[in-house]
Length: 247
Length: 247
Image 1 (cartoon, each protein chain N blue to C red):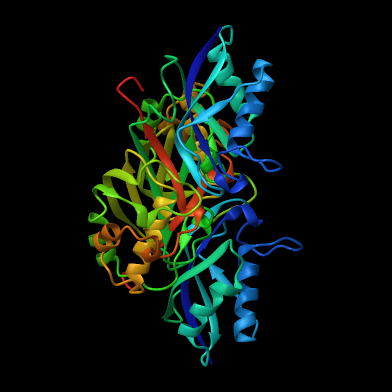
Image 2 (cartoon, one colour):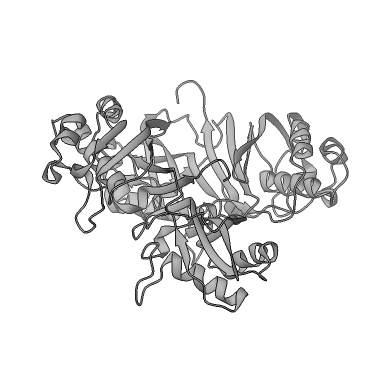
């Protein structure tokens, strides 16, 4: 008999090929599965709320794992951070119902994307350095158009074919953190492939004046060829995944 | 004839032996002087507002340099960030009076020290991970005692003998940033050697219950042997240096 554990994972994406296990490279998922094996002595499968790309960070992605009923959640949650590499930590362990699923039970995903407009040694691994001038007022206005339920085909990169391109965006904000640092925050029930990076790259292209169409026109066109650049992965953090009331 | 330039320096202290030039190791000062030499083709001396220790970061330390009158401040300020290593950036260049001095004209220095109470991959190079439980309410109370003009002999590490141990602390705060992250912010006209790290280490020792005396008693004792641990350098950032109205 097995029992399902929920937990959250923080990681520095610089060190990994992304979340998902791939041959011959280090992934977050494989590092987690190895650490669980070291403690539990049985192979387990770790399931995450999503599959972040190579270089993308996480502060609070949700995950679940099925372990033998005899496993001690308190002992394991203490021991595992010492076994995992410096670049990964796990928190908020709890036992969940076997119906719970880290991916399918998620009701909201939150991402943060940081841009710096001047060279920043302290943010160099966690922000995109945009050297050309940006019309931030326009970018701020365009952000508002993203809110709501839309078909996001324009902002879905090739390579994945999800069952639907429709996402309900519940929050979008652009925060001026001062000293040339800007933070995009976006929350939705789901995201299509590379959507946040595609949105941010396009918004910055609008801010540069390279794209003159409005965000709402770009969304409504449902035409991938109209999207701007894809922002680099190291500026992106999967902040948090919300589940129902229980978590 | 020469002219004096002011500028601010951001750096990731992990890469350096500290601010000051030392033989056979990389310092912030030597990297800056080399970069100026590459552009100006004359040797210059860079003077900083203070000398941060090995591993300590900076977001906005002030500095000055005397350069030939013919040097172009706009061109240089554009070029120099491309020459400096990733871990150093310079900003806010301006011409100042020859009476201005990056160290002696400073009227306030601001430091931030970050503590995390759980393993944090994203903060691992910029925060001290304190695993034992901390009584933050007590730490918060003790912080208040630091405010004002005191002799800080208790919190001055050996190795430097400044002309005075008296500092006027104008701001102290402890901010709960959530998810186990805590930020100390402290501003004063001047600091004695390793004062912020000594204060933070002692406050954490108080929070652990290892030190039972109050901060005001420790300060009044003027006895170095009463101080607690010195917090590690990588949690410390020299945030900003204030000058008169002109800067």
